[in-house]
Length: 80
Ligand SMILES: [Zn+2]
Image (cartoon, rainbow, N blue to C red; front, side, top):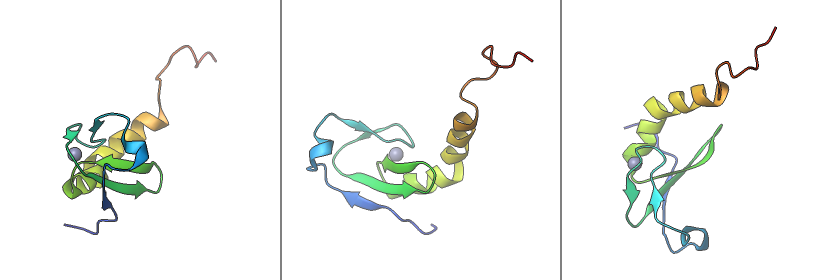
């Protein structure tokens, strides 16, 4: 385990009362508490468990960064 920066957050927060949340890392439903951490580039990430923060930094983050860098690949934009 590395250094985790997140913290548990109760679902009793007003902004949480909207709907059921899905973990932004693994996609599972977040049952009760949200593991909330801040990524320097992506902002607030809502996850289901602390290990998901580790997973985020080791795997998911890189994929998200790629998608962020190139949302569309050749959608009529390159017309040189
Ligand atoms: Zn998760």
